[in-house]
Length: 117
Image (cartoon, rainbow, N blue to C red; front, side, top):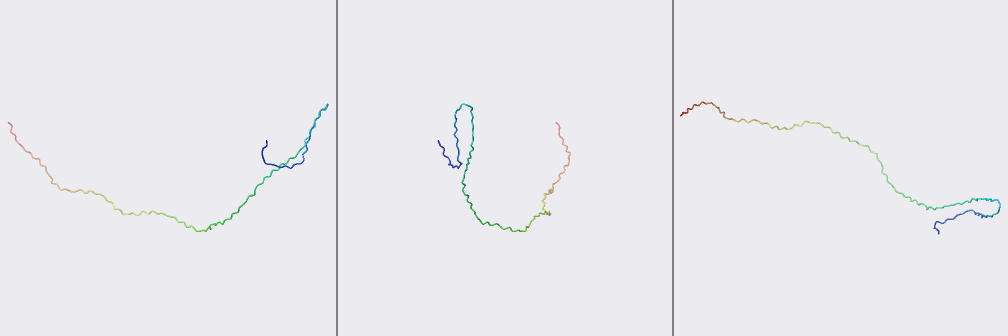
């Protein structure tokens, strides 16, 4: 079973393969291993599309700054007490004089004789 993937291409030096044979001979056994180094180079190329740059020009009007002298106004409040004449009403009770006749009491002694039966 194969799995689909990106294809790749490699360039390498010729490779040498070794075939080993063993022969049984009576006597001493001796084994000699020789390692041959191989070089493998993997090159990965990624293509990046060019980035397009747009230049936009725009006329911008910058307001002009005109220096002016500043005038400061300060409000001052002054309180002045002025006496104002006022009308004051006052209720006054005036006693009323009433003329009356004077009655004099004079004690009078009166003797009454009462017959006794």
